[in-house]
Length: 109
Length: 116
Image (tube, rainbow over all chains, first blue to last red; front, top):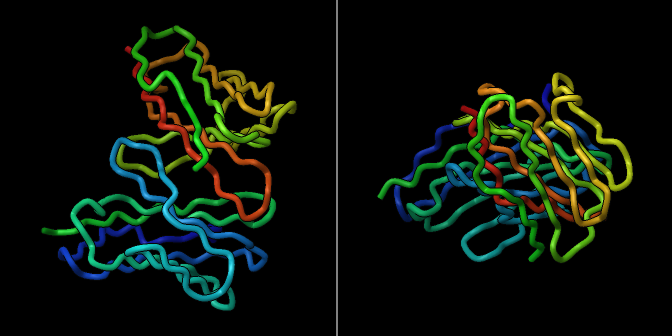
């Protein structure tokens, strides 16, 4: 079992819709959770981080963490074509960082 | 936000050449730096983790004698690809971490390496 798992997609949503990206992790002791966005040919950039159970909102982005179920998700409201990218989930277990393989998102105009 | 500078951004060189890539944390001290490689349409692959002043820890399958990593200061790590061959052509990305819990890795812009 991989430390961090994401559905590779591709996930396609129409412009203006909500895109939902999910990530599960295996280490119950994981402490910090991060979402990165990576455009094709570019390096990843940090979008959101979350440490506590519940929701954290930042503009059109909402990160949701459920430690009991060991999943973290990212919601993108009012999706725009510029949101089309690969989204990477990263987990800090306290000893090591683990990245998921990423979910490819396409927002269709 | 935290800034990580990586250069060169693009390198084209002949087979057999050694290439050095620098990664600098500009506004924080990076206790740990990570080096990744990414082939087209594939996910990030961690190559090695380096802690300042220590030898790097390489992931399985990564040749430490071919990919030399130096992390001599809290703001600079270098990756040298020795005797590069066409199969080493890839996108190399570094990231830096300040060592505190709840802090993210910050990525450099990456180096596109093309070996002819």
